[in-house]
Length: 392
Image (cartoon, rainbow, N blue to C red; front, side, top):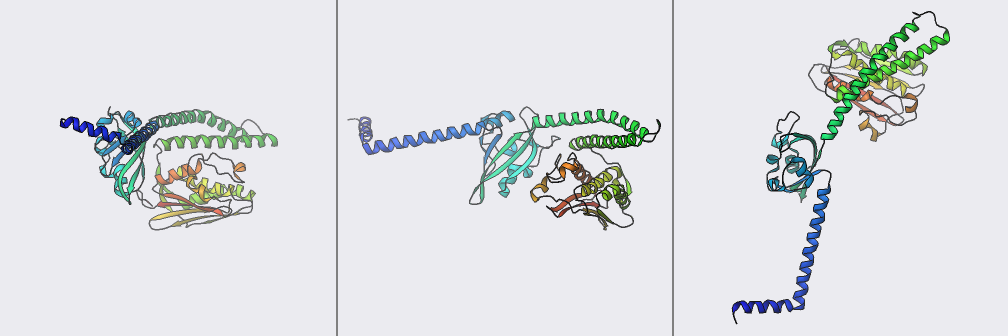
């Protein structure tokens, strides 16, 4: 009998062994289960509405889902096994490549921390794609053995933001012209330029003037928000006495504070000269003092304190109002945020004041923060550097 026939005979005998046949069947079932799991995993990864790229501990790509391939314009073969930072180029909004060491994938692999950042990916066709990137390291005994990046294409969101900003800007400009005209006519009516008014007529004209003022303020806020979102909010700088500005604003709110039977104290040096955009900084301080009065119950106390140091000026507005829950403080300076409380309905507002205040103060190189407890009031503190170009 030839050697080949002998081997075949032995193989047939082994396959006829019930125990061996059972082992082979179990091995085949395990392989089928593994293939099924891999198939389901691949299907889930490919069904994600976001791009997924996995790497080993050196940053070489080990897995890519279909969304990432389609978004970037690459094939699976052209990415697999390549070094991620070199193959997929990340840039800033001006097409300048990001240094390798600041890439989220590298920071996650070197620090073992989850990294979330905005950037732009250079697609294979040469166009830029704005993305939100989140990279999570795969840890083995506390040491990164790889990383998984998930990114989302923000192109449509950016396009919607641009369209929204253009609409807000256009609508605000179109609204401001007739509203300003109405203001002029109402002012002339109130001044008696068209003849004397009865007491009732004067009352309604004053109410109309007040409502028109609120409308113009809303339009101005919307215009400023559009400028902030587009990065086009600019400062008209000149030296101003912030101590005098604070005294003037608190005087303007005197009648409203008296009607609420509130006590207002102002503490400041005689002068506090600073290079600022006077109109915008006045708007910021007016908003803080107005809010302090509106959210403080009748009979409450409001303290406004300005202090001048060598390197900075601080302005603190402290009230005895309803306060802010700790979980709501992080979003108090975001757009259209109005917190529910017993006074918010009566106070009204758009939720834009603090958002604009934060951006205006930061444009001056300063900061604004709040400390608060529900039922114990709030303190808003502005810090401004005394030297232009400085930071606090």
